[in-house]
Image (cartoon, rainbow, N blue to C red; front, side):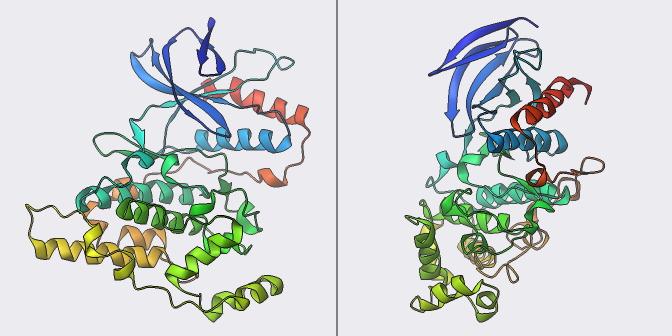
Length: 365
């Protein structure tokens, strides 16, 4: 392949010449993203350059996890990985990793507060749940769902992206630091350091759905424990069953806080927040609003043992109008992931070799 250098903001992309007309579209802790024209297919794509993937072992693990998981999933509501390349063709010089993905129009952050009607809102949440169910069926927990990690097109097509913090279910059997996941969308069990399961992602969907309705972040904590306070002020102090599962030192802190009754779901999300379609019957719209609030209440349940599951959410009356068995039950990659990356112990050179092999073997998949 022939490569050329392109400036994308403050970053130099060294990419195959088939990719032209680059424009910066995003920057985060894990990478810089640009749109580009793929001259071989005459389509626009997104190219993500991973930032310093071999700076340390944590960065290398994250790069490997994102690449490996993106190769394993294949669903219309999960961003597709089209190509992987490095301008360095030998292990000794290997430093840069580029992921080529489908390009979407924008992310959900851009449509917060625009006033979605029930059809559009329920369809977006349905697609989100379909993508999450596919991940969970493959044994993958996303853990970092937030508006900026969910992209959409003008036709309301939705896709989930960014798997740098995803974990397999086996890896999730132990507690994780709460400082990794974006604070505002953290499930309560993560905040208080409990073991967690797949439905941490359902809490995040509830936060995103509520943000789309309210037009602002639901639980905007200023730090780790303020996040907990913001949640219980609105939702209420959790039940004794939840508190009994806490570590003694955490339970002592939670018990020391003033008891909060929280607010009713009708007060948290009053009728005035819902953008009714005036061409439709007001009674039907009110029914849809009540259904939306019921789904929100079931997703924004502090005790994960009582929180709605992804299958229950897909069958909820607010969502199931869109239910398509082929979309909900799309087959996972044969065998699924067999990854316990956090339990793998490699030094930087070993991780480089593992990732280099993944990159160079991509075309054969």
